[in-house]
Length: 85
Image (cartoon, rainbow, N blue to C red; front, side, top):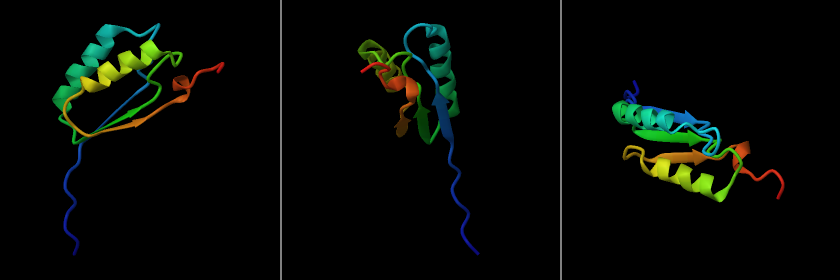
């Protein structure tokens, strides 16, 4: 017999797309829901930005820093890479 694995709650969020057309009230609602989940780990996958601009990354970072205290795994998406650089 093998011992039962402990229960693990994972919160996965993706496609935040900071920058136009980001809607702040949606992000605020997501933060409220995230607090209710009480996740053991949070997986945040891209796209964090709409156009990979510095101010969009700053807004995304502020959002990620506002998540409940839990380890966060971050994976960028295609919108997180500048198109023409």
